[in-house]
Amino acid sequence: MTGYTKDQIDQMKKDDMRYFLHPTSSIADIESWGGPKIIEEGSGIRIKSVEGKTYIDCGAGLWLNNVGFGRTELAEVAKQQMEKLSYFQTFNGYSHPLAIEVAKRVAGMIPMDNPRIFFTSGGSESNDTAYKLARMYWYLQGKPSKNNIIARTKAYHGVSYGAVSATSLPGFWDGFRPLVPGFHHIEHPHCYFCPWGKEQGSCDLECTDALEQKILELGEDNVAAFTAEPVIGTGGAIVPPEGYYQRIREICDKYNVLFIADEVITGFGRTGKMFGMMHWGVKPDIMMMAKGITSGYIPMGAVGISERVFDPIKAHGIFMHGYTYSGHPVACAVALKNIDIVEEENLAVNAHVKGEQLRTGIRDLMLPCIGEVRGIGLMNAVQLVQNAENRTKFNSNIGFAKRVSAIAWENGLALRPLVDDGLQLSPALVITETDVIELVEKLGRSIEQAHFEFLGNQL
Image (cartoon, rainbow, N blue to C red; front, side, top):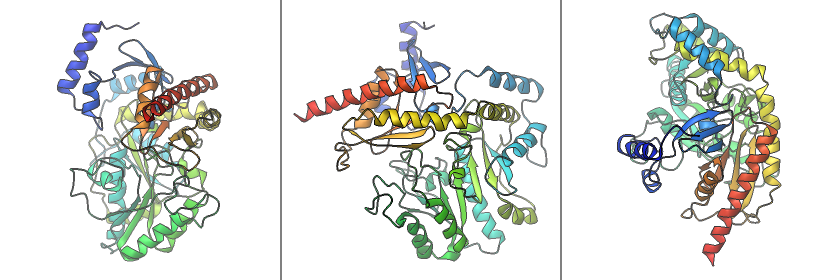
């Protein structure tokens, strides 16, 4: 049952269109729907609209709700901390017990040597912090020209000015130039649509050679860092080929370039290990976190800083950077309890097991427009193609994945289309086998309906 009348819902939608500018949302789409999709409740992996209909949230919000909706224990620790100490700054040498505890806890979890932790309010802030750290590191080494950052195409690193300069997805730069100078991009590794025309298992990792070539093009003495998501997220849930990151680490070491791992999405169990880089046994010099650190119950982010990067900053005496909410007490309380849940309920293991079941179930649908089912843990995508035999993409004007998502909404799935007709499948890590079966059935039905519709339009 819903607590709203039809008139109240209609008014909410009108008010939304009148007063609310949505992030990264088509204004034309919202108007054509007669208003947004308004969600009022969540429980586990499911959400409920104001109309009273329940949906499986296939995206865990925005890749972040690792422990599921409705965890009263997180609400309780937030309430307790608000009553005890709602806020205090961590500038000017101040601290508080929970900031210290979270820093110690996270430092002991991440794949870095003797790291320090800097707190932010989210992923974009973590990315901006990482790039400033990389540039400051070389400045303090007496190498101020070593300031260029290399990222990849299809990367998503956030939308603040530094972060969006590293991001490389359609539309994110339009109208916002000039961007922050000193950001460069190389082709991303995607074996299904390999930019070098190679097949997985029969290549020489040309995708890593691209980094070496870019460093040589810019000049070793001009490159501060290479930044990458362990698994490309919004760009399509793309897992690199085996050996990729080991070779990337070697190239960074060879040319004295810092390696920055953006674990904003991949951290805290989503990939089937606690952090994405653990799959490849590679340690970054700087590491960004957010999203799963609190499962989205309250905004928070963090940056792991290796001893190598921290030591010259310590010698310098100050890091002239910070955010009002760095180490917010309530966020710290939620983060600690959230991490407890992830560890005590073995959610990384569940992500591994249920991710395998999810990918297998979708492949077993054997639908002609499913080209690739890719992912790791519960960070997955379904690649929709017009012809699976030769990997022919749909014309971008068709918006096939967008149409599948619209049909899926009617079938009970909150499903997000990604670039190049991918579908994001990254539910909360608490998903059960029964949930997986339901998700696969509804997804298959939605894809079939959209494909039947497409074929009918071709006649």
